Every structure is written in C-alpha cells, then in structure tokens.
Amino acid sequence: MPMIRSQLYRAILSLVALVVAPLPLGATDHATPQPPANSPGNPSGENLPAGLTEPEADGEAGRDLSVRRFQPRSRLVLPRTEIHQAKFPVVDVHTHFFHKLRHNDEALRDFVGLMDRNGIRTCVSLDGRLGDRLDSHLEFLHRDYRDRFVVFANVDWQGDGADDDPASWACLRPGFGERTAEELAQAVSRGVAGLKVFKQLGLGYRDFDGTLLRIDDPRWDPIWEACGKLGIPVLIHSGDPAAFFDPIDRFNERWEELSRNPSWSFHGEGFPSLDELLQARNRVVAKHPQTRFIAAHLASSEHDLKQLSEWLDAYPNLYVDIASRISELGRQPYSAREFLIRHADRILFATDGPWPETRLHAYWRFLETKDEAFDYSEKVPPPQGLWQIHGVGLPDDVLRKIYSENAVRLIPGVAQRLAKP
Image 1 (cartoon, rainbow, N blue to C red):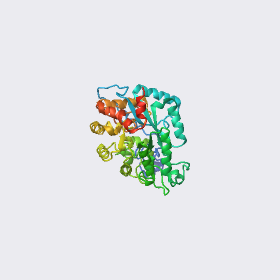
Image 2 (cartoon, rainbow, N blue to C red; image 1 turned 90 degrees about the vertical axis):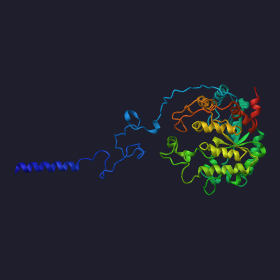
Image 3 (tube, one colour; image 1 turned 180 degrees about the vertical axis):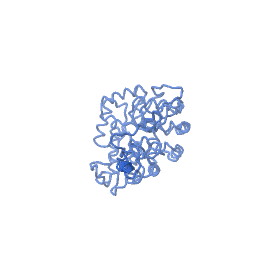
Image 4 (cartoon, rainbow, N blue to C red; image 1 turned 45 degrees about the vertical axis):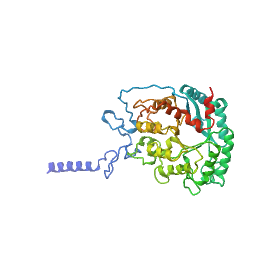
C-alpha cells in the first residue's frame, strides 16, 4: 500500500505540473495561432514575444524572400550600347527646377554642365507659380542661363487661403478664372511660355462641399481660353499610372512601390476612377480647340497605347510628353515603337528631371538603340516597377521631331534658344 500511495502521489504531481506549466511563448489560452512578425498577415510585427524575431525573409538558404529585397541579377549576355549624348539637339519640356533644386545656384550650374555633355539645349521648367515665386524663379534661371531655360507658370489655386481651410482658397472666389487669365497675360509679357497644371486638380483640391474639384469645371474655362489667345500651351498632368487606382494587393504590379508610398494610391472611396479623370481632361481639350494641350506622362494612358492613339486621332490640339514613362514604353517595345513613329508629330521629349546623368543615358539608349533588357533607372529598387526595358531604335526623322522639332512648333521662345550657337 505505501508503494501504491507513493506512485499515485507522483502521478498526481506530474499531472498538476502539466496543467500549471507555463504556456509556450506567444501562445494564448485558446491556442490561437499568431502570424509571424512582418508577414502579410501581420505586417505590423505585433504578437511576437519579446526577445524572439522572425527569421529574415532574405531568400538565403531556402528561406522566404520579401519582394522588398528582391534584386535579381540578369544572366543574359547581350549587346550593350553606351550612349552619353543624344544624337540630335534636345529640348526637355518637363523639368522641375524649383521643386528639385530649390533655387540652389551651384546645383543649377552643375546641371547646365550635364546638359552640355548630353546635348540638351533647352529645358522647360514647370515651377513658375504665379505670384512671388514666378519672379524668383525667372531670376534664378535667367540671370545666367536665359538661353537655356523656358518657364511655364502655375495657377495659384490657394492664394492667401489657409492650408487647412480649402473653402478660403482663391479658386473658390467669384471671378477666379478671369483674374488668373489676366495674371497669365502679364506673365507672358515677361517671357513665360506656357501653363503647367498639376494632378491635384482632380485628385487633391476641394470645393466648398469637400468634393474634389473637377478638371472640366466651367469655372476654369477662362484660363484655358486665355492660353489659346496668348498662344501658349497647357501642359496638364491628369491621373497617374493605372496601378495607382487598383487595390494595393498581391495582384497589383506596382505593389512594392505603393507599399513604400501608400499616399500615392488613389484607390477607394473619395477618389474618381482613372477613366473619369481622363475623360474630364479630354472634355476640356475638345471644348477648347484653339488651345494646345500637352498631356503629361503619355496622358496617363501609357498602359493602353491603342486608347491613347485614338485620342490623338480625335483631338488635333492634343500632344503628349514621355516624362518618367520609358519604364512603361520600354516593356512593350513593339507597340511603343509603332506608336512613337505613327504619332511622331505629337510627342515631346521629357524626363520629369533634373535627374542624375545615368538616368538620361537610359533615355538615349531607349530611344536610339534596340538594346534589350536594361535598367531604366539608376535607383535600387527601380522606382516604377520591378522590370527592365528594351530599346525601340527610332529612325532619325522621328528622333528629331521628338527631341526638339515638336517643341519648337509648340512652345514660344524655344526656336530662338535653339538658334543660339
């Protein structure tokens, strides 16, 4: 009996130990499984116990690989054409010398040297907001380099209104369109050569009721009409890449980019669809046939060149620039080459710079060669999709039109600058 009681006692102690033993780290009373930190099911990294970390998704030794760390090195052995200068003189119609250089004289001097090395004769800066900034921007660019830069004005939608009170903005006051038209006339008399409209019209600026201002709101008609009468083009950015209007999920081809920059997403309630934005812009183009419009970034239809081609056929006063879009054109080289040749009279060279010299070399290589599978950007990871591009090898007559001839026809002051030795 004593032996039996002893064995029973030990059994009871063992059972108690199992019941009161501490739960495994990270477990709960209900044994609910927790996703590992930084996994798709647990992006915030919560619920991992202190002292424990998720194995790094670096792809090493068969581990999972995060798309953020995916930097494949191509094993293709292909011809490589080094081009350090454009074949013909270039006009870059889409640059930002206030937003990117902040009126730094040394940076401007360095970039003019880069222009010289690459064959860029003239840049169009799109940062001349009406008001005091226009004065300082003209002074910054024209003090030493008047023959190298053309300036476009910007509409000052806010005026003296408060940042956090859109209802106080100048654009919502009666007569705003007419006042802006008068300001543009004064700016043109001082050498301004065009108007740039940013994508916030349609995606950012708001009306009294909180809804987004429409691109085709008739309140802006006096502005578009004035540009036609003054003989200056309107370079308008409407929309953004199509992927920015899709959910940020595993099907989105720009997931990596949007996951780093979620504010670039225009998906969901509160935003119009991309098609609604582009149709509104097209209605403005159709309504003002005497005004020439340059739709920035391939009119935000770089993903559908057939649609863009139809627009160019339908609207003889519509032009497009290729700023920051060789990443899209270069992954569809056959369609892109056909498009660029067919509409050679309506396409303008543009970069959205100033960029480092390596980026410019990618533009020359894309347009002038038939090289395959090369990087469109010097950045790691590439900023507009995890892919490479292929060159389109355009004929010389097409290159001349895109590089400068179309800008000469469209933008006041460009011809005179190109004529300078």
